[in-house]
Amino acid sequence: MSEWMKKSPLEWQDYVYKEVRVIASEKKEYKGWLLTTDPVSANIVLVNFLEDGSLSVTGIMGHSVQTVEIVNEGDHGVREKLMHLFMSGDCKAYSPEDLEERKNSLKKWLEKNHIPITEQGDSRRTLCVAGVLTIDPPYGPENRSSSNEIILSGVQDLIQGHLVASQ
Image (cartoon, rainbow, N blue to C red):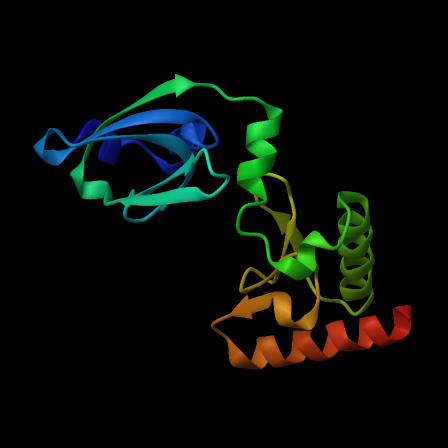
């Protein structure tokens, strides 16, 4: 088992949003900005910004990773760019302040309805209901996910009620 596979997800977090050099099996080398690491498989997603303004996304299977070395710590600008790469179009229409206000308003509404709610993730942007459902920005009914259909339906109704009440 490689050193990379022996690391914990918390240790992998130290590499996120940094430019890295990855050596994989058969001495294959990859370089790019580490966007995320899958906590189960240790798969790595690298992003490279190309000269023409487009980007290249590469997935590397965790079992093939031999070593990962930080090449560049990056800066706040690169981190912001990476954080917003795959954000849905409807989310980009809101400023960070608007999203925070929407999140706090929905959180208060759910708490008022006696729904256990916590915040998750590095930037505390994801709301988590009872540990089984998540709501991502911009916090609308279509932004929730869960494997439990009953909770999914109930929370969707609450979110729609909140949207009606706040308009």
